[in-house]
Length: 261
Image 1: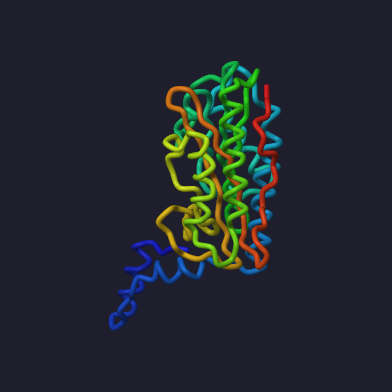
Image 2: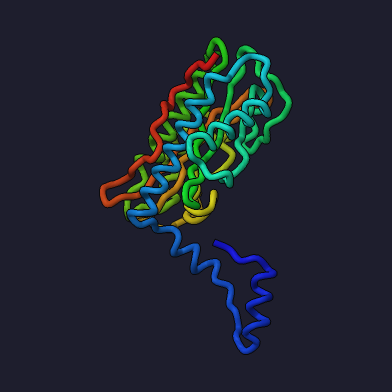
């Protein structure tokens, strides 16, 4: 996956007449394609992550902090079979913090009327999953229900667009068009997805300027979102693989905005 500087120095000292050439681009291109064995491991990583979330949700309660819920999620990831080297520290955000796509857990306490966003993943045999779901705490506010439905439709459109021979930009466009037509385009502030495998973010990237053509065996995320500053945000993220016939989703947790407390 990678080599430390010290390891490279040892090799250079042991092979004085050898020139070492960086091969990041070569390996990145090779790693875009998952064979059957790799795909099965990634299905397991998604399954572990999903089971961990299901096991975590009963612990959600008014007054707990983002850090407390993130800690419980990590415990459940390990119990369900994730490697301790999880892909990334889970994003667990409440209320206005959900409007930050890359929030880190804080001491903010969960309150009635909040949105609750969780972005997490598991590691199985050095392969990763990366999923996001958003929940309502208490009564669902009409505005939150509206943007959640839009994001759900955008996620569905992005997944439907992922077929062999289609450029990555088309996946981004399909999801983004749904959000823009609903009048929330300026609140979708990041690319639609990224490749996934032995790294949490790798090629190919689902963004508007990427004309890389999708091919069978590529695995990536579809994660549109709407983020309303000072109020809240909704993101739905799934892990998918391109097949000869279209898309296989490794993730199948409900995508509706459901109430957890």
